[in-house]
Image (cartoon, rainbow over all chains, first blue to last red; front, top):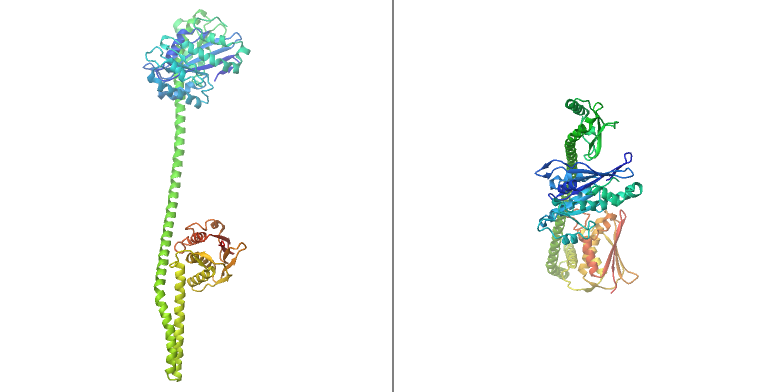
Length: 222
Length: 380
């Protein structure tokens, strides 16, 4: 849950990349680290890995400082996708403000996608959150692979859910990564605005919020 | 000193990452490296260089003698702290998840123990239920056996009655003829005192035997009525007559210690099986007779009801029926008597018979005061 420190005028947010093993969560974060030029950007911290598989999590802080002086921080986390790391996944997911679910587009991975999504809903419930009320973006990654499930089919399959439209990406090639992130920011902003009155009190409009946090060519100070 | 962050994803401050002693060593190493004195502060310091971690200023480094060294030294510290933080984050997360897993395991363990307890309790209850059911089945078997035995005895009694009927007929007839012969012989015998005494005695013997034979014949008639050996279809029957013979049978059963008071008013004829009706009445009267103490009263009354139906009332001043037993009175095999003395079939058989005769049966009872069974047969 977003945390606001009134004394320091600091608003701290948490976005989690979730999804089945090997779907490209860390790749998403690494690409964001390379592509994004937000107002403020910290180091990408990749914790322990084994054979390139995430054991704990990765984290990258980004931030903006509004004209009103609000110090807004957003930490982007990834979780380990492998089934056995569920307690780690749950710990990282706790107090998340938004989730980007990275699914694998390969036909053989559709069951894993579904299981991971159920696991996300389960863990959110255990943590006292409701997946229907949390800003969530579903990204289908690995669009560049031959044989990837047809986009129209995926969009149709998810059309009756709150998570439509889906976001399409090829994280390895840096395609769709920033767009997925922006889609999440767009779903996140109304929640934050309702709770912290970003427009009224801080003069921080949705477009600025998105631009400052997800610019790819640098932004002037707010 | 335990270095652990409050939550793994809380922003750490410098003291969370390395303790004071290690901070002093770091500052000492910087001194050894470039010959200048550095100081590290956890609060803002004028002119000091901010040391950042994750966009957060976590300390201030100052070098008053050579301020130009502050920035590179701070970057060096940041570089080192980055890896320290990595370790701390991983360790804290590991600690958190291990604790959470342990708590979850304990919860599951407690849940398992609870469910094991429940199953144990359930299995004990099941065993009790099984034992109860076995007892019920055993009782029912005993009672079935008992009723089969009684039926066999009834058939035997009927058979015996049939076989006795003929001989007792000619015995009675012969005794009467013998009496007539005695009178004829008497005229030809000497008329002395001794002969007269023998003759009187002989007459008395014959009369006594004849009355004995008559009693045997009466019992046979009752038995035949009771056992239903010669009735096949509904016949017009006289309810009062059936009652009289059934009373006789019950009284005989109780060795004539019991006298059933009969208040019988004339009733219209009833179409039915007299033997069956007799059996129903027998069962009801038998219950009444068993309910009373010696000297108690059993009374049977017949009358024509207001709507023209024939009513039979059997009343006793015996022990009465407990309220909780009332609703089970007509249940087959329900009995308050020990196994072997009652079949639990008496009233249910009686009810079935009364129903077959388009009749009704009611029981009123008060514990310790007595019972009244009312039969009503619809007028034809």
